[in-house]
Length: 279
Image (cartoon, rainbow, N blue to C red; front, side, top):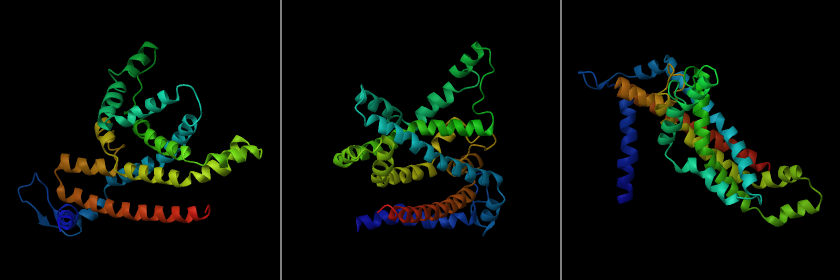
């Protein structure tokens, strides 16, 4: 009974109430209060260029997970070797993951990349170049957020892959070497297929985290310039905070929830089909 009551209070009721609010015109700055407006919020969403841009940005950020995975896999392979200072490098690579994303985005993203006072701007001026405007135009701002996001979360994928590498049966790899397999052949036909379950788990977890990306965007650019770096979650936050439009923000959240469910179910279905080819 306590578990049922907790689930109803924290999941069922907020979901039902959120669906109701999505069909209302509820602006906290208006004196008229909340009233039913049917599908108006969803019609507004269809014609909202900022929403479409935020959705496209979310796709870009999710696709960047593939690059993060490739880098994390390379680092895991490196740290799995018997190299000097291996323990030191393992701890060092984990430091960004140990820190708060908001703190990192402020210290590194906001302070170091600042156009006027940041170290990058000062160094460029001393060398005779114009200060780099990391957040002045759309793609440099997006890439800056992607780079900061990757720096924070690559250690997470790396530690999962490293644990998977250390759990591989050593005799299988050794037998491949005895049979004359090169390092690339051993990786392609032995290491990578055996590590597929861990790889897929790491990528799916990172995709889920990426779909919720908001803190870095809000702290570093606040969606700018002109909404060019917004994700769906950061745009919903700005609609709530800047416009006080609870109805429209909740409608976007409900649509985004449906999109996430459909996307993740499709991704898991495709992943299961692909995994059967290696089983």
